[in-house]
Length: 473
Image 1: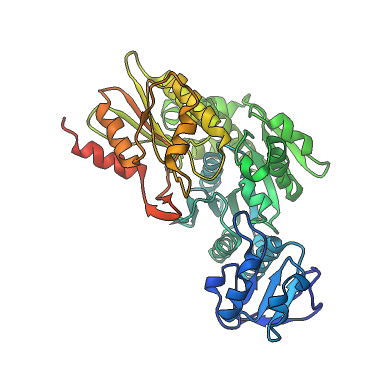
Image 2: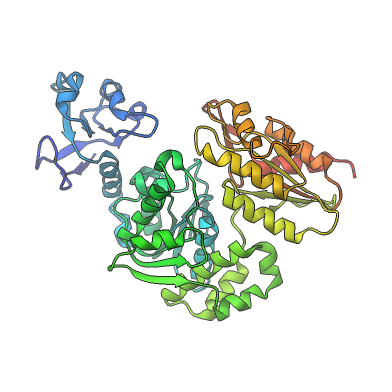
């Protein structure tokens, strides 16, 4: 049993200490003596599940609606109800309090942007580790600290508060001093990082994404800029798309650093062929420049910065080669936006030799970002020789409709349609000849695929490996 008090919020019963066993925003996880927290979500209004929570044993409910609007709760004399203005914020604060406010015991660096966040986080983490700092990382591909690697089984970049603050507590307990945290626009507007202050934050770029959540590009930029309000130093990728727009939200309390590529350490790194082989493309040099600038701001020497970057490996599912003896260039990459797709295809376009074909396999996620589908189809048709359109987390949306939206990007290009992603990958690899490039895009590191609301085990890398092993030489 643990205690929480009114955290400067307007509660129905003020200045009262409430004793509860545990708390949750999921009514199915509520047990006798627990607290249920309700707020209006994207797909569901958790207030609709208050009665379910009470039936499961909730004795305290916190919600955003007035008690007058919840007559079914008002009739429950043994249940206390508190109204708060911001249910998500209350959830984050309550999670932080449960775990001893670990965010206050750590120096946290945030990285946001549309593309390049995970790689930038990884590079900062590797540099600090090389410099002997006690550092942890929480990113799209998972968490790591003190030799531990933790896979976070979700499709979110920034974990929900219950997962995030538990990870931060574990890092504090392990003696961690610095944490590099990947911060998505969802994480910002949905208050997942509520209560966290960053000693430094970086912005890679801001291109149109998740407009179904943000409404329009202007709102997306404004929402991304929320991180500035809780950051001391701000590092902007001077060459990133959309940086001029987001820069307008910098305040006088922020110490601003505009990061270009005129840096002696970056030039030295750019001359290392092994590094450029692992981190190809101009976009990775921009990511590296941000990592270098933040590390230097934190007092890391140029020598340690260089060693940390050179020793780093890309995050899982970021331009990841699938080894094979067939002479094929088989790549798994997380590219799932128009900008990322264009960037990775341009890298391959410049790498390929004469007569080597570019064969891409990709789809688009269901129930979100419908506006990007046409654009991604257009980019693929312009930079690929062969494109196989398939599934990528269709959720409850009709896969054929998603694929048709992508194919509308070019009515002349002969897209190959294969909704079954396994068959699509097999088809792409089997039609490839020695030297060709086969790119499986959009899933990257992910280990599941959401079909009709069910998370099914999945790995592009594993399917590619199995297909290659079954091929005849």
